[in-house]
Image (tube, rainbow, N blue to C red; front, top):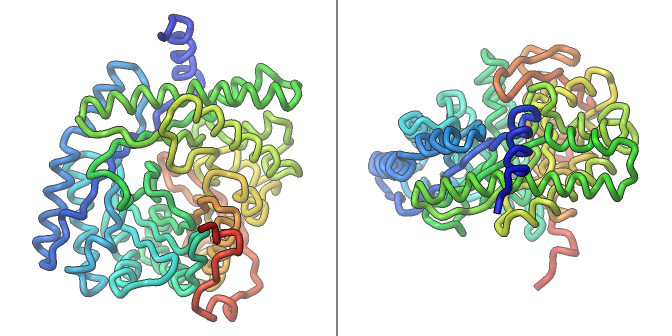
Length: 454
């Protein structure tokens, strides 16, 4: 039973500490839409999405009003389009037509984003996979709500370096095609290692082939709540610090569980998972970097940052798992630069570099996220950064991801404005020494020895 004290505490977290449900994401399988005729495929996709998701936004709004819990986004994820479209799409332009269909369906049902314009190529690419990947720059330039992801590595299979090389070129081309909007297309493109099938967060969400026909996944967020709780135990030892984070994560996750169960009941669609990630926003007091500073760092990026982040990530997961039997997705602490004012401040103060962020990704929820780099960065340099991050994920048996934004026409020290939840970011320097000979070797980096567990 929930008592009045818990109700008041939750109200305080919502009203004063930026607690919100970041997203209700409806995962939809498109496997039954497959057809060899392209117009028929597009028609099937549009009908399936607009039929299954017809009430998603309405239900989300009703829950928000009934429970006074902010629900920031309503989103859709679909089966990776490289799988759905291979029978009908013979060229990159064919896949772009599917992207337009996804965008039209997303607008029709009123969701913020639709994810799943994706390919899974950790061991190799089919012709259809490659066509979809090559279509990404045009697809993201011509659509508003479509998000794209490509999984290029896994602990079990290694890293597909042909795909890594190609994605360096694709990210650069996407930046060029959307340069009039500060290369914003790259903010909707993620490169993964060990991508999860049930991630509700964009831009990396897709509906895995192991999932049911439709599921409701919910992502919760509350960096401000965690920071406020830690202010109450300032100066305490690590034992008390960890207990405080764990208890707070439990409370945050219970709010998400309530919303997920209600959304599932009202939509008549099974509940999938709660993703209990601490996802920051540009709002004051809603920052993961500020949590790290509350733990005892002068700035995020100072010595001790990786250890503090590891502690935070672990305790968030421990608290969340006690609150829900179905925790999944990414779950932990996100460290996107542009979406976290504390991270932005740390970069501008010189405390946080790309290399330090890479070290932090060994222990955080995802990886190098929403990082603006100079627009003249070579595709091979981008591929090298991707390869480094994929290696971290592969060896550590965790999900890692990269969302880099080479901002065409801007250089180190300048600032780029993305707006809304995407915030703004200082353009960060990248290592100017080349890695082209490494990237163009091609082939596959084998899986690590500890992956052989059969």
